[in-house]
Length: 165
Image (cartoon, rainbow, N blue to C red; front, top):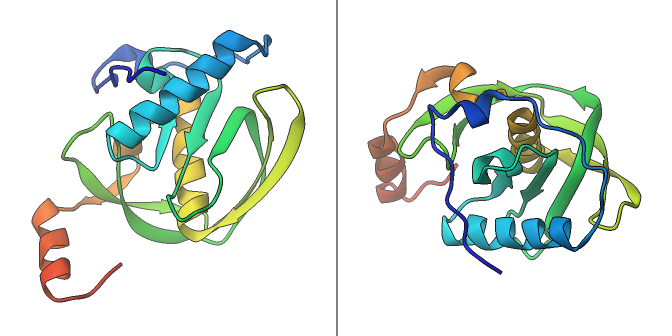
């Protein structure tokens, strides 16, 4: 496995719609493994293929809560519900945080690295992370959805007060 370079805004790679994966082979498996390694190294919770220079419909999410890593190949959103505004950041926008409104619930159909189909339902932070990564696959960046920019010092104040989000 290798740690890949994360593509940063304003690269045009980030604003292009990605191509559907047609070959489920060792190259795809290596990409998924490298993306995971890169995401962990960057202390992220999700990463999409265009963020490492690959215009493929591939994304991963790992909340680090003992759950399995979610690998999504050719994901399609089949249902959404609810709405909430929470603070988001993005590995392609270092230091930028903002309040973004997203659905509270999402249902997704996707493929595993071997091409088999599966369905996934998620809520709250997990749904937010999945939707953020699928946006990347459509060339939609979170900075276009920010309702209010949040200063990183606001996080430090919350930590000092002993509160968590």
